[in-house]
Picture (cartoon, rainbow, N blue to C red):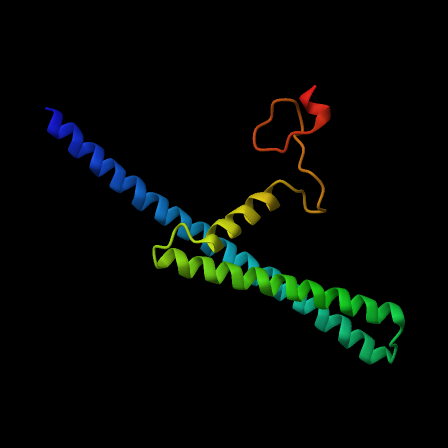
Length: 139
């Protein structure tokens, strides 16, 4: 009887490992798609901004500053995209403990704790799950 239980435990562990691997790959693929989308959006904003400045013949200091800010955003999203690609490749090579994977997962988690405007994502009511704790809610 004991042998059958051990066999089920081994099968369960193998299933858990396969499930974890599949889940990790899905998360990283979604991160990759999101990074591609964000990069495309910022590149579009930069192109529209440059086109607008070229058509108006206006190369004001404000326009240049806006262009620089958009270029910084492009670089940030290019790095995010590269990190997501590297993490997915590591996961596909079964290097699940690679530091790049851990770093990308940590960044995903940290972004989940913020609202769209970058503020702490606090719970709408006391006791709500899935939100960052705030001092007002802790009581």
